[in-house]
Image (cartoon, rainbow, N blue to C red; front, side, top):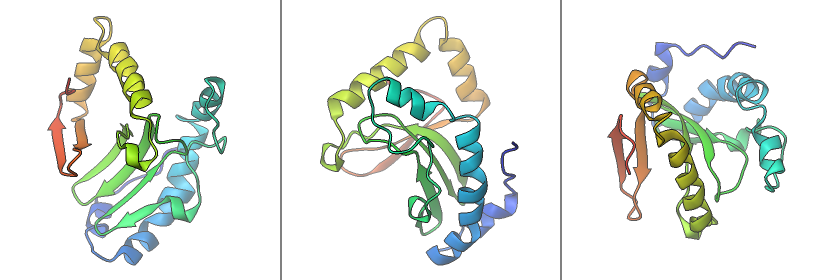
Length: 167
């Protein structure tokens, strides 16, 4: 199975305040092409692994194809995996300037997450990728792919950090 092709014109197409136009333009691409690709290839083992460690996945698919799972706002669409707020979340998003494929950690207690559990998971991830054996490979991966870290502070202000894992 091949991943869907993304064309430069898509970045122009999403540059609109009209959320209905964004949904019409991107719903099939995301739900009928991208989601099945992810579920059948790169993320096909995530839900069974979650079940193995004691989580209770609602689906065997990492991403749902339900239209309401594709979130659309002006100049932006996003979708995230089926799962809880107290674990790592895979997400994909697109805006006029970027396409994001990433991991997210929800640190907001009021939205149903367990901050202690999320901190523990994040600590283990950092330990795995920043140890001496993997640190240089991870750093090269960040630089080679122009990866940015994005966070939202407790006050709700967005920030971006380019090419560096904040410690």
